[in-house]
Image (cartoon, rainbow, N blue to C red; front, side, top):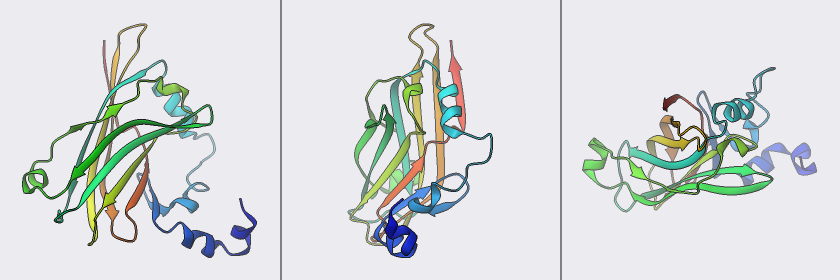
Length: 189
């Protein structure tokens, strides 16, 4: 932690005002979220590695819908992870327009480009980054990211789902960073 933070935490936090960290229970600025939420005996990274043991990411989809889509607004969704001290892009959508009334009423899943890799090699939970483009008014997004992974030794397939119901984006905070929280896991043999 930098000396600047100890002298004036508000000044350092203000420099990171456009990056927000969102998890299941709260929305905190990314700089303050790392120190919170770690109970004794609870290690989300360890639980992630156990849940994804020997599974290789093979596919991913994202479903995003805005409460009130704006003309010319779009987003991109990226799933990132850290393995062996390297930041990796695991999956990405490209640009998704948020202006279609049909998408607002009946959003559809969009395939993500995927880097196949073993998910249990990640040193921490993967992060979902939602970046808004040309967002002029505040919007709230509903997001569902679904990962499909396969065990190459047993041919078992697992589908892991993560859902967020209210992700805020606006002109001052166009980026939301979310931990991938396992909410549903389905296995197929």
